[in-house]
Length: 230
Image (cartoon, rainbow, N blue to C red; front, side, top):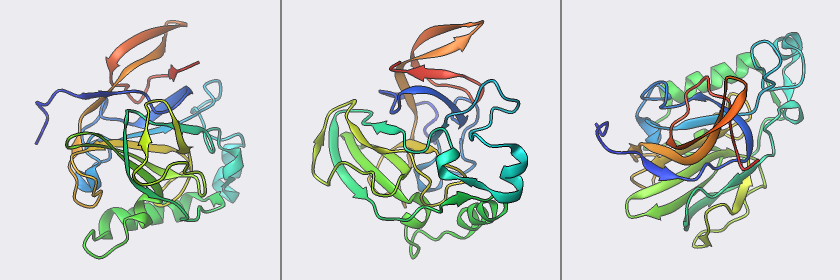
């Protein structure tokens, strides 16, 4: 569709160390679909790099499987989200309640239902996106930060925002398997009908061969240990 287009460069929307389990640096479409502008979308989580399997939570795998995990036990939940560009806030939807705990089986069921039965013509986008912010970066370029923490959105519609300004916090609202930031660029402010746009980050660091190495205008893979602003 738009594979030949050069990626649009924006600032990394988080601070600290992150992993992108779903990224266009590994697979396109990164989320297995072109719907809802997700063709080139990223998911970002924080993990314990020293534990087997790089878990995103501070409890045991057995506890996760048997009882689920409280949102407070996820490393990234509540982390600040930053504006990836100078722009204007087009949409800022808050108030969608997060589930207090993750649960493997109910979360998989919820994700399957939304992936296969969501109808953009009649279903509420918030049931998938949860709490979200859409910014207009340039003509026909819109940035979406999705699944934000309930009550965390710090901007309002029509507000001018500068790149690097805190706009919300990482959450678990909507169709979220676990706390994470879903980030994407689109050609429209309407998530239900938008096409995804390719996106790269103007700079960040990758941990390779025991040291941090700076990269510019790059797209992380799903194995990269990356950091920014620390």
